[in-house]
Image (cartoon, rainbow, N blue to C red; front, side, top):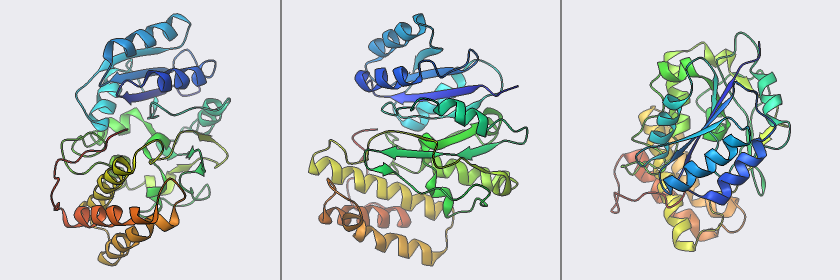
Length: 295
């Protein structure tokens, strides 16, 4: 029997993006699959959009939650119909190319499947480079799986307590990213067998989206980069990465503006460096309540 999917989407209410996401899933889902839209803004319009697509046969419902991507995802998982299913967490601007769900379903159909990851693209191509299938999961390559590329059995998600709601975009802390990596690192700690069983889906299977800096002003982009740097640095500190790795990671922040194409600029390396340093130290230099401006 093929596994069912649960797709949980936290959104601030970007209706055009949500409509495109739902349209990309039309015709790809099985009757037992389900989408939950978790509205943290524009709630009535999101509910109406879900009802529109549900009336056309797409298995989608809408709910609401307090602010924060992690809180929204946990709320969405709880709102799924009862029973085991494979969870995944698209952004509201994610798109699923034709045939993607079928290929993901095939990848997770083995009886031993517990958790895996697949590739996410933006307008420039793959956002990260996944290892080859069969590679052992470790504390370094785990960063290649971002939130929208996670595949996880619901029972495992529940067992580890879901996403940590104190981190991720919109959280009430300075740590505005790395909630997906934190989730997987906790899975590795509590269920060490996943190190060998982790399923790296073929890199040809991917979802599409947009880059972190797309459509932002210079000020918004640098604010977001600093917030993201804080989150990644904090995750490395909490999960006790080697000191040499933390130091190298912080220093590499200065090169962020060189290593990434436009709209990122050379000067963007500074906010990334400062953010990573704040995260590793667990201390912010002003603007403690900074949150990322978009999700």
